[in-house]
Image (cartoon, rainbow, N blue to C red):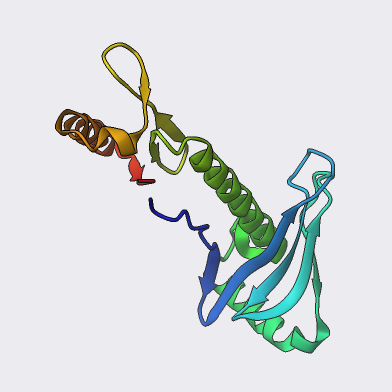
Length: 171
């Protein structure tokens, strides 16, 4: 079985790579995603970030030790994203937090449906359980040990890949 690895979500603008680490969803209101995290720029922990979930944008508290790096990175962000929503660091932090929350859901989903075929695209993730002719559930690992089961798995994978879904291999 392949190990399920959590993806990192970063955004790079010029020479500056922005990344959230230590992300944790917290109790808060439900108008936006409540979280705590640290903002790293070029692997330096430059700020503490949080959103209370009351609909406002993320709060970014800069560590003064890295103020120069932060300011240069913000200028690069503004140059590469002129007149867009991401131009503001608060919005970029919120976007990265949402991607991290989606990733946590993806990993939990995959673990919950380990015996099934799993497919995903940018908008959704779903499982296709395997059943015998009499309706009994069979896990993928067992199905591929038999010629007919392997052909069935290959046909299902081909069908969904033609529709633009990625097969997430868990066996």
